[in-house]
Image (cartoon, rainbow, N blue to C red; front, top):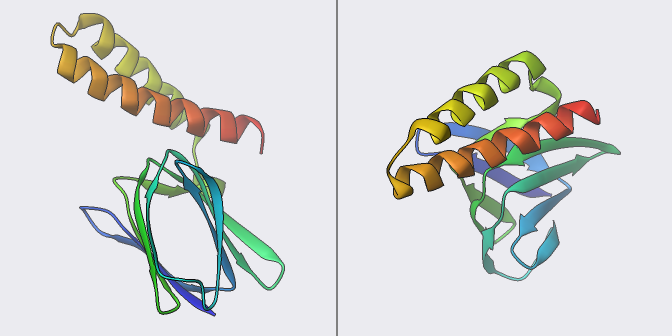
Length: 131
């Protein structure tokens, strides 16, 4: 068994045991099982999957970093949300608000931040549409 911890700057999002964890890394998906070699990797925006006893929980993550060490997977990310708990109407309103902010923003740096947030909400929207 593995111990998975997903941590954001605001809170500990998840602390659970897992048989397998699949991470969305920059080089593709990486499956982590017990006794995996030590690893530090950069994660891209995508789906982090947690498998136990034939069931899977999937989280949409905004990117970040993961460390695997001694049967412990530590994920540091700005956002991680359980896909089964996503709210379509809430996501749509956030997308509309961000699109308005992007259209009005003069600062290139802030636009890049808003675009990144928009991409995260669009990924959530596509996951809700396909579930």
